[in-house]
Amino acid sequence: GAASEACHVCEDEDDCADVKSVEDLVLLLSSLHFDASRALRQGGLELRKVRRGPEKKNTWLTTAQAAATEMPNALKSLVTAFSAVPDPMLRYKQLLHFAEKLEPLAVEHQTPENKVEGCVSQVWVKGRLEEDGTVTFQAESDSQLTKGLAALLVKGLSGAEPEAIVSLEPSFIEMLGLKQSLTPSRNNGFLNMFLKMQKITQELASSAGSAGSDARNIPMSKKIENALRDNFNPSSLDIQDDSASHAGHRPDSADGGTHFRVEIVSDSFEGMNTIKRHKAIYGVLADYMEPSGSIHALSLSTKTPAEV
Image 1 (cartoon, rainbow, N blue to C red):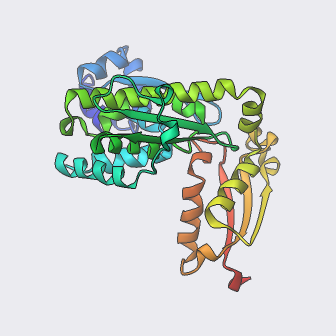
Image 2 (tube, one colour):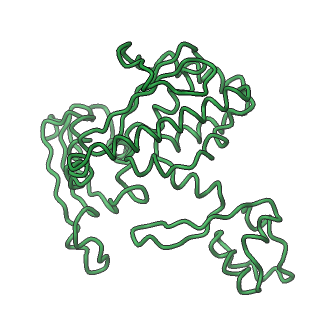
Image 3 (cartoon, rainbow, N blue to C red):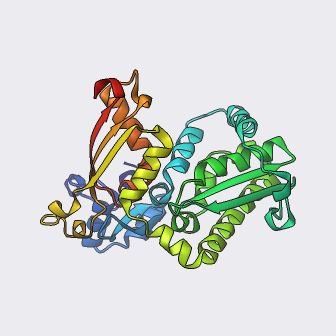
């Protein structure tokens, strides 16, 4: 792909025949005694080494790939949607639509403590740590455009765990493609909103103490249960952790949290075929699935009450 096009150090095209990823390209360049990072940088690409997968192995990715990999799923979807819109004016209108849909922040929370400094307009952000260890944000602004930017961050970061928010690089802001639609001061304000949300998240995680630690250590089966009950209001729900039976070929499964069987009965599935029901489940549990979470496999039985 772009990485191969950025590299022109190989004289023999056969050398590149087996290059299927950035990882392969780095190995090839290293075998030819080239500085991989420097060679690709000269071709217009930056590389980062990240730790991926259950075993946290080091992997070479382009900066854009690394940023996308580390994003919470909701934010990743927003970045994909916004970057796919070629017209800056349409992106601008989408922000105004987000502003209209943003749940208002109560006046009593529009305090100096929650105010974002360095913004052209007044912006307030408040966060709370949920029982399942994730963070939920609320925001308000006296400007519709700024409110739309705040809404984008609220939608993208709410539901993520503290570690994912605090470790997130601000490079996703560039990837959204909003720079052309905003003045420099608005762009700077957008960054300040994101930094404020990271600070709030750090404070929530720290101040929670042992209670926060307990929340983050909730078993994955309980997190699945909470998410499914909140989104599907099931009349029947059974969750079985089958991880231990897979420990032979996947040692990290011995402690649980990787393989589950879920049987759920809900009116929410009415009018949906099996594939759509499963997609709905996977959408709700996306942040708990690999690579963001620990779930490797789900076996699903999804029925309506009439089908039982």
